[in-house]
Image 1 (cartoon, helix red, strand yellow):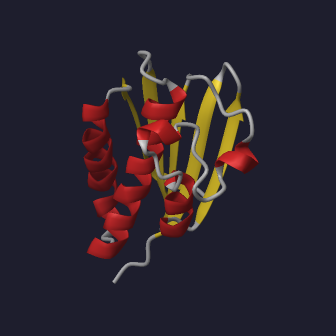
Image 2 (cartoon, one colour):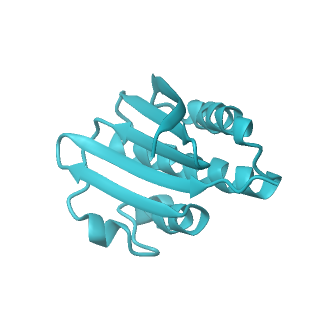
Image 3 (cartoon, helix red, strand yellow):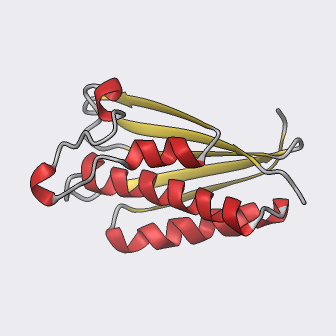
Length: 143
């Protein structure tokens, strides 16, 4: 898969930047002419990944989030969302529906499930004390 275009965005891990991330990735994606439904799926998945980094990765501490996105010649959108936060001790457990490390804050534990539902592939890499990278892909079928 050869990238015909790519972007990299680094921003503070603040809740108010979640919508900025959604808009930036969707603006980058529109060059593939996705349907509104596909664009909504991508925005939702990005929102979940960024929110996870802010809420779970940094747990109120300051930090940065990096998003990289690439469009391939054959219509694939690849997105990675990375943080240098606390990391995930058990990725398999964290990816289970309804699992949350913050039940007292009424977190649903559905972030990874939402990402899996809306994207064609999802991979999570994490090391405790180093950070987490969420890699997602979506095939954009042009009308």
